[in-house]
Image (cartoon, rainbow, N blue to C red; front, side, top):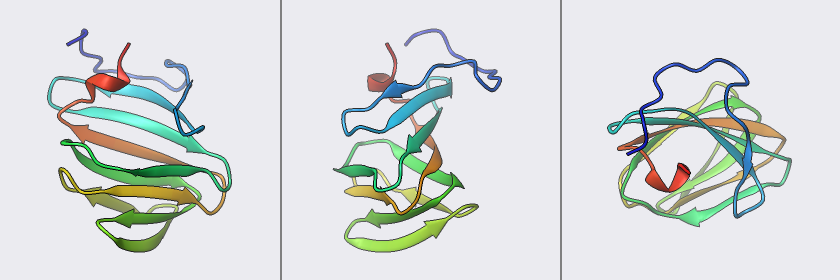
Length: 112
């Protein structure tokens, strides 16, 4: 694993464009946990997918249609959700917004 990053200040890390046209920046990570911020324009979609990591997400800004294992709810600013390991999930931004996601263990595919 690349060297752990245990402190972060606003603007320390650059945004990168994701395959689905949104953006993300890795804020912090250790072997056990990773914190990532995702940015979405209105209508942006985080396509349905699954991964072995447990994911906890906090809606920092905006409103999202969140689908987890076939169940869909609207989650707005200040709301949160958890995606257990292996479940199919995705989001649609009903307005421009940001999600702050944690992953356990860290997502090696998000690091250079």
